[in-house]
Length: 606
Image 1 (cartoon, rainbow, N blue to C red):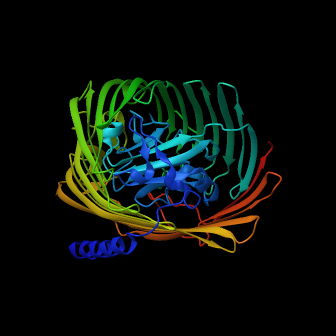
Image 2: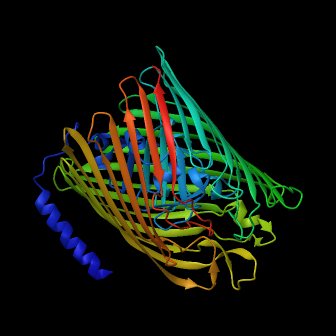
Image 3: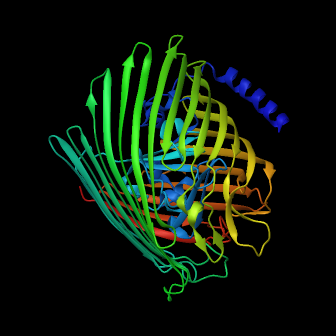
C-alpha cells in the first residue's frame, strides 16, 4: 500500500506541474463547478470546498441510464448502495465502507434518518422530477450535520420553480413495470409552488418481488417562507430480503412522510434560518405474506424537531452557529414504546487568508442524547489554492453514532437485540487534491478512519441467533480518484467520467466469527460513464461498474440508455440495465435482476 501511495503522490506532483497554467473553468464549459454546496449554515462554491464532494445535477439525472436515486448513486465512486430488487425497492446506503446506519440522508437539509433502523432511511426518496441536484459529502460530517453522518452524508436538493411548466411521463418495462407521473410548477408575484405525483407497480423479477409505489411531493415558497412536504408509500414482496434465502414469503409495507417549514431572515452581514420539521415512518413486516398471524412486526416512528441556523459575515470570515432540538418516538409491537430526545449545537468559523489562497474552517458539534449523555464532534477543514486550477485540501474529524432502537431491543426467532450497547465512535482524516481545467477535472483523496465499538449483528456459531454487540476496532484506509473529461465532437458536447475507489479494512480487535452487515466493503470499485451525442435529436449514455467486495465476490455490470428529444416538448427514451446478464448479489444473498429494459415517454405540455 505504501508503494502505491508513493507512486500516486509522484504522479500527482507531475500533474500539478503540468496543469498549473491551465486556464480556469469557463461557465459555458462545465456549469457543474459553479454550483454552491448548500449546507445548513456556511454555503460555499463547489470549487472552493475543502472536502471530497460529488455533485449530481438535474441534467446528469436526465442523461443517466437510471430511473431512481438508489440506482444512480451506484455510479458514484465511494458510494455503495446495497439493493434488494429493481428500482431501489429496498436499499441501504453506505459510504466509504461504513454501514447503512452510519450514512446520513437529507432532503433539503432535513435529516431523514430513522430512530428505529437505517433500513428505512431511503424509504422517502423523492422522484427524479423533484430533484435539482444531489450533494454527496464523504468523510466525517458530524460537525456539520450531527450524528449519523459517521462516514458521510447525501443531501437531495429539490427543485424551485423558475417558470410555469406542466410535465407528464409514462414508462413501461420488464416485469410488467409500469410507472406514470405528472409534475406542475407555477410562479406567482411573491412565490411559487411545485407539485408532483408518481405511481409505479410491477409483477417483480422473481417470485414474491412484486411491488406498488405511490409518491407525492409539494414544495412552495412565499416571500421568505419555504414549505416542503412529501409522502411515499411502498408495498412489496420481500423474497429473502431479511432472513435466509430459503424464506421466500416475506412481505413489507412502508409509509414515509415529511413536512418542513423554514424561513430566511437577515442581511448581507447576518442571516438567520429557522425551521420546524416532522418526519414519520410506518413499517409493517410479515414473515409469511399470506399468514399475518404467524409473525408480524408493526412500527411507527416520529421525529419532530426545530432548528435555527445563523451565519455572520465579517472581515475575519464567516461564522456559523446552529441548534437542533428533536424528539424521536417509536411505537412498536416488538420493540415496545421508546423515545429519545436530542439537542445539538453547532459552531464553525471559516477563515480566508493569504489573498484568498488559504481557507481554514474549524468547527464543533455538541450533542446531548437523553439515553446516552453528551458528546462532542470537533473537526477542521483546510484548503490551499495553488493556482486557479489546482487546490489541495484536508479534513480531520471525530464522529459518533448512538444505537438504533432495533439494535437495542429487536427480538425475533433468529435475532436478539442488546440494550447495553455503547455508541460507535471514530477518528477520521483525509487529504486530497483537485485540478479543475477547462475540459478536465481531476480529484484524488487518501482517507483513513479508526473506529471503535462498531455495532453489528454477530454470532459465534452458524446455528446461533444473531445478537448485536460492540465487536471490534477497525482501521479503514483507502484512496478515491476520479477524472471528468468534456470535449466537443461533431458540434456536440461529449462527457467521459472515470473513477476508482480502494478500501482496506484492518480488523484490530475482533472476537466474533460471523457478522451480518459490516466489513464487506467495496474493496475495489471502478466506475466509468460516457454521455455522448452525435445528432441533434438523440443523446446516449453507457455506464460500467466493476465491484470486488472484501469477501472476494466480484462482478461487472453495464447499463445503457438512449433518448430522443423533439422540439415539440416530447421525449422518448429506452433504458437497459445489466445488459450482459451479470449474476450477482449486493446484500443478504438476494440475486439482482438479469438484463431488463424500460421504455419512457415524457411530454412538456407547457
